[in-house]
Length: 101
Length: 101
DNA sequence: TTTTGACTTGTCAATATTTGTCTAATGTAA
DNA sequence: TTACATTAGACAAATATTGACAAGTCAAAA
Image 1 (cartoon, protein in one colour):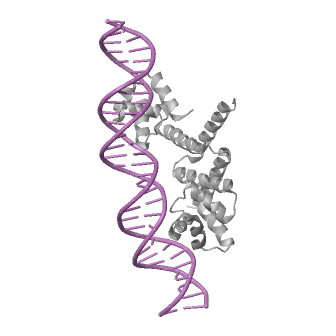
Image 2 (image 1 turned 30 degrees about the vertical axis):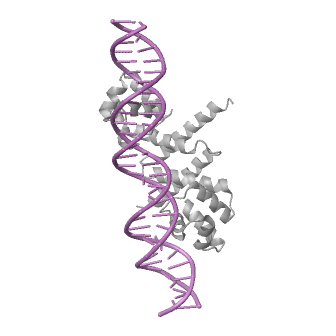
Image 3 (image 1 turned 90 degrees about the vertical axis):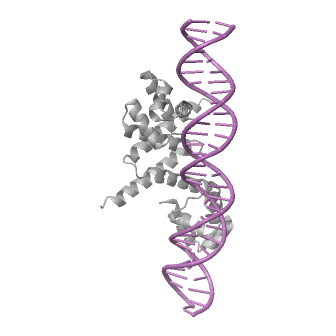
């Protein structure tokens, strides 16, 4: 599930208002609204703030947020899956190179 | 293989000089040097120019270039593989949603 | 050793993008 | 209507990206 939808769902489950969560994040309500709707992207610190405000695992949220950024980046490419495969290979390579330390 | 290393290898195999390829791309030699070394990122048009100059498949190069951007984005995260997996799932989701057209 | 040519690095201004807020609009329930 | 939650649009400010220039390194040739 896309990042924005996910945090909106969480917020609604907890019956919190945009205004309440936004206030905890020190941002404008309008901005949080856009983040939830996916028309604006959050910054990493904001994701961290969100994790606190929604009482979620920060790591998990960060992962979702980054995955979302990747999806937005490649979703319109003809061969998005191939791109991900190449990225995965490269990551594996890097990991091996560094595993000697 | 990282995008920069890859195009450098191609260029060297073809025995072309930075200055020659850069000229075809209408950019400064210094900029191409940085792109090859991965300290600057190319723009999409420049990748297209590169494909022409090096006589490579444009799609293939674009894919490598995007994969590279993804890698740079997540390589320092603790769970980069998990992020890619999430992105993949989301892409699959999107594909299914749109496959009704 | 000097010179030459290929490549690299650092810095800067110009440009482009992102970010956050404000205001106004929309929707909705009392 | 009123009150309140959310959304949309527009704008300035902050940040990031881009490309060029000048100066630097390095190795091989003269």
